[in-house]
View (spheres, rainbow, N blue to C red):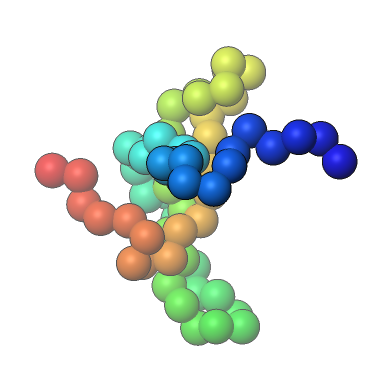
Length: 65
């Protein structure tokens, strides 16, 4: 096992992806949970020239005003 970068007593923070800003392009209902799902599309983030998108639950996004 490789040696860890961290030791007891270190101050750390969680690595989080940058928040996205995009447009809701589709709304669906999850057939299993019954939650409303919102497909959000935003500009290319990884350099491949293709816009990014994914579904979010309603409580995972907010209006960007």
